[in-house]
Length: 157
Image 1: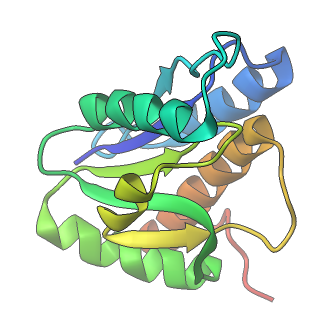
Image 2: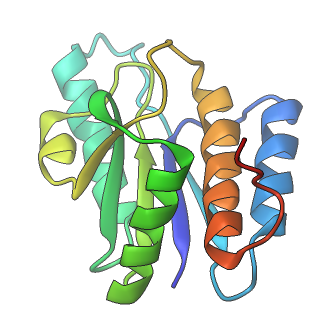
């Protein structure tokens, strides 16, 4: 089983790449976290938002592993605690399918991507920069995995 972070946007600041890499590196070999960065659609050609979203949606669909479980990040998604995420990840492990976490670009995600989600997930009530979302999500995946494996990284208060 693999975890995937499928994210629209490339050329993140060095701190984003370093933060993401730190938590991805900590994941065990049997459940790696891998990043697929997708090119954002250029708005320079006078494209409307719907066209941009549709083109990015096609890139997302092409990048998703076959038969993966889709966790799509959305501001109207389901709130989860770290322990709830760990429980979900434990149940996903039982399915034996890869899990892809999908992060949209500056304009969000096309409705068809949201509709295809197995889970819509909300990371925060705050608006977060996309690079920070990558780091935060990678850390939470690692933290939830540490809960599952009984590693002391997560210390519930």
